Length: 172
Image (cartoon, rainbow, N blue to C red; front, side, top):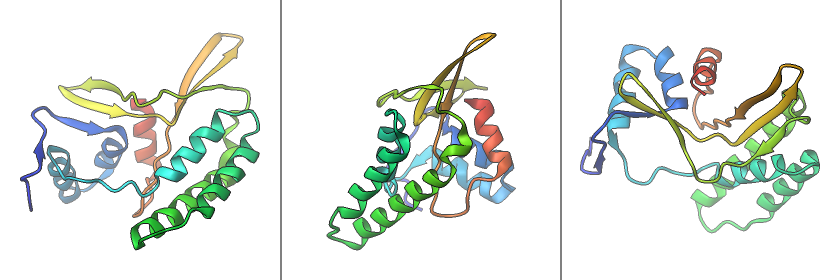
């Protein structure tokens, strides 16, 4: 293993990776700790176009039309390599899956706000846990304003399980 890249001086983990760690077996936990401590150069942004299209759509009133338009923009992009072709395919899959479940989220009445490039972080037992929500949510109820966040976690491998998702939701 090449650890010549960057070594984090203080403990750090992303919220989705923490959710995975909580339900992982001992071998996978060790791998997660090593991957968080010894940061590999050049993480691949497989889903960046899909995330961007979803984020833009969520900030508009007609989310369904905006998602469809974003999907068409991604599909129309030319690809110059196997990497960009795979990234485009994965982004299209992400948008398709989000379009299929959007109505079940029941967030049409929520105010949605983009947080920009900021990463939110908290400290748990001296470990910095970071999360970068897709959008922040707010809604007014009889009890007052409720705040929340929507975090998209897209993975090429095994999907995030229910327990991992619950763990991430508790951290957020």
